[in-house]
Image (cartoon, rainbow, N blue to C red; front, side):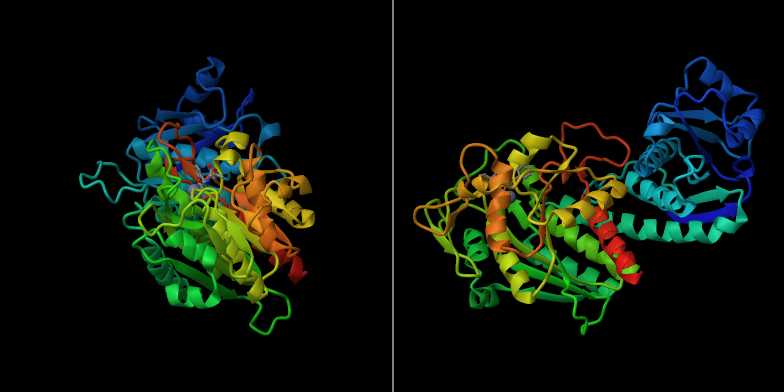
Length: 508
Ligand code: BES
Ligand code: ZN
Ligand code: ZN
């Protein structure tokens, strides 16, 4: 899909379809709609009065222009009530209307700057949200369907403005949106790939290719070097699998290698398939455990975006990657593993493997001098119990850092919610025979997992995101706006926004 900008009016756009946004409760329609509706002979007005179009959030009504306009279809999309409007609702409504127009066969479509009348949102932000909404909403993972559905694709998307002066701003916004949304889709592609394909080696190879494309430094650590480094926790998880583990390191040097400011460290859990190991999971929905590398994919996607957005900050991404399988060589409940920093871990469940591989990654990050550290992991089903499907769990030893991320997550349209880290929860991880155990106890499973990570983080400023709730939209769930079945690419936008906000802070 290509984006374009023109100055003028939606009423004279030559193409297949246009998108019109309508706020809920709007009695009088705004100018753009009024001009188009005049050509249509007042159809839209009539449908609003009769209550057929209410402006309810994400509700799309497709109208035929019947030769009265130089286009075929008009998508009227509800924006919800003005006082609840957010930037994310631009993404959502554009995603929803793009899909409706695609279904109706449109290839060339246009929109105005949705929500511009809410004076607080700047035109470049609106343009960015439009680009993100379109690319995220039209995403699909169809490579394994040999009989391709006959679906037309939207090829051209034009943003139309009456104000020539803001065209460069809109251009800039579209560019940012394209980079970010495409990076989210890179993450989704990595996660949606079946585990039989997306082995640790394949994840490393694809990351290598991505790094070459965008110009990132990459290093892949294999088993021999892991042994030398003493990554006993990662190796312990990996020992049940025929597939060798990989430790992926991506580095971006926006501030130059001589900078005295420590690089930001972002770490992603990369379990390419989590069967639970010897503590094997029930078979229902086990297929979705191919998504247990969504954290790794998120930090990789983030780096892909960053390499193109070029902030003046140094960032290193770490992704420990392994399978977790039962076999004659697998690690067992009761085993004791030694992490890279020498700390010992009593294994009570081989299914609590994420925290183990993250422990070694955190040790490695600390040895590299990365600070702060942000990790992203599909860590616990307890977090799903706590927050359901719409919100990521957040944990920290540094409130100021998490506060900044709360702001950027809001712009990203990604809900996060903080859970407590009282010391008592850490005591639940104490072991009788090792330094710590990998199972907390009754209750607070998401927090005891976070406390386990903190045991390795020590006092480095750190935030942990448990994306088990949000990384993947399961089979039973309904799809809406850009929230489609399969991988969501969650946290790429929050992390990218955070990094760009930090960049603005340091530039000032
Ligand atoms: N990968 C899972 C967590 C998960 C569950 C992610 C469902 C996405 C959807 C993780 O490795 C795991 O199995 N955690 C266990 C930990 C428990 C044994 C302490 C869990 O949460 O059940
Ligand atoms: Zn597990
Ligand atoms: Zn797991």
